[in-house]
Amino acid sequence: MTTTSIAIIREEKVPQDTRTPMTPAQARMIKKQYPSLKILCQSSKIRSYSDDEYRAAGIDVSEDVSNADILLGVKEVQIERLIPDKTYLFFSHTIKKQPYNQQLLKTIIDNKIRLIDYECLADQKGIRVIAFGRWAGIVGAYNALWTFGQKYDAFSIKRAFECKDLIELFGQLRQLSLPPIKILITGNGRVSRGGLEILEAAQIRRVDPEQYLFQQFDEPVYTQIDVDVYTKRKDGQAFSFEHFFKNPGAHKSNFKTFYKTTDVLIMAAYWDPKAPKLFELEDVKDESFKIRVIADITCDIDGSVPTTIRPTTIDDPVYDFNLHSLKEIPAFSEESQLSVMSIDNLPNELPRDASESFGEQLMEFVLPDLLKSFDAPIIKNATIAAGGDLTEKFAYLRDYLEGQVD
Image 1: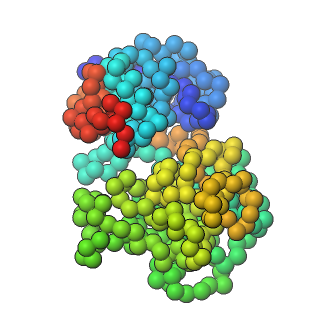
Image 2: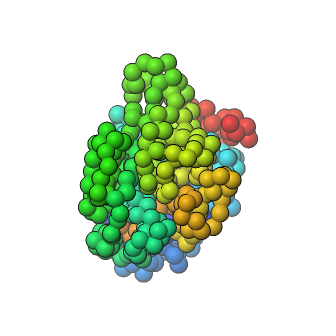
């Protein structure tokens, strides 16, 4: 494969996303590293790095990117903007058979587009090499605290997107005055680790799960649990990660004891649709269901958190969920009801920081192989479609492609 040009495409999904897969400084570095490679940036009025910043870095800016071999985006490309016979890299949100992107994948197949999904780029151990997860965790956990402050009129801090950068955001956390609440964060990956940065910066005390469940504190505390704690096997055998990942449907939730003592839930764990939900919708009617703020960073609609009934936006970040009618009500309308933050593009609240981090990963782990060969293992294993069909690894999407969504 001889790749002669890459284009950084404009983000056009609504709501608007201002991130970029490659900053101007990074594009300049790549040009120096690969002198024969042409890099083009599609003009954008909303990108967090301006057209002039790319021009100042020596990158051509143009409206027309149809001559580029590879097109790099972030979110899903609008169907009407797809260019046939090209190679695209973006987060397609199709590998879980998401109904809202079925037509996107069908159009990609029909137009013989090669689709390489960032979410599927992984090393030999299966660990993802590129993601915005840390930034989703940082902003999601920050928004959990912001939501609590708004709900109970406990304190007032800036929204994350109002902060210039992560340093200013951390500074906001020094203004917090939290009552002795209990905060639970799930997961053990990039997202949860990002969330932990916020809880630690807020100087909230960490306790182990047993202390969290059975002790009372005169200060705010948090604990972190993974799937081995909030899930158990249906057959009563001891939990093992290997068995869970092979047989997620053979498990059930073990979360009830936690929802009885948790005030704020930060959902940061990956969820397999075949795995049990964290709790069932009817559980919220239980008088012992104590949770009143949920920051669902994963934002799987009717997924692990069944009260996540829709994504929210940066402009309108929270809705309330009536625990009796099981229906949405206006945000912060009743303290006794549940407030849900489910923004689906959280890193976009700190777009320049998040873009720089993403671009560093792209340069280190992806570009060397991408520019060498589409058959490089890391690239091939992340290729969902090519040549007008699904690749072998993603053949399981056939029924989804044909409109038969589970």
